Amino acid sequence: MTLEEFAQADGQSGHVYELAGGEVVVVEIPGLPHGLVVDALQRQVQAYRVAHPGLVYYVASGSDCALRLPAMQSERHPDLSLYLTPPPDPIDPWDAWVPDIAIEVVSAGQERRDYEEKRREYLAAGVREYWIVDPAARSVLVLDRRGDEWAERRLGAADRYRTGRLPGFELDVAALFAALG
Image (cartoon, rainbow, N blue to C red):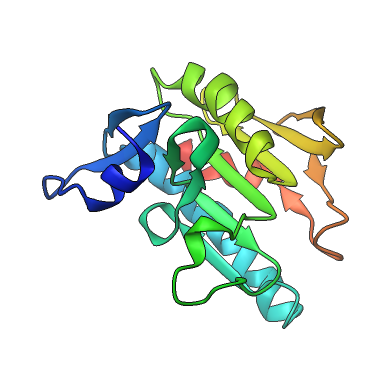
């Protein structure tokens, strides 16, 4: 299926769909642990936005944005996307607007998709940082674009992460997993 066909397709209510290499993928609605981690991420990002107004243009979750990769016939919906600048086309932003930071929370059974497939796709799309938050491992893998490849940094539960893309922001990794017990 092409991106154009995918954009016109009707899906069933209650399902999330992505296009991966021309194949439609039905993404299961994540469970509560996944949602709690996404919520913790959103709280940290929103606190940053309040403290540093104007530095983040838009924060989108899942179905609120689309990352389109025409050359790969793929469309993805990161769990959280941070856009630092306005879209080039506010009427139809998703063809050319790429998040500066894309964040995925790994769900059980979806490790390959988040660690391998999306890693390749997000690099090809021009994402500047890709954070893979893994509740099972209680870790975050930060991929930072360096030209045409990723530089990796793995964070444990006791770590904090600062990115130059968000001056003054500090990701508290332990807080991401606190609600999981």
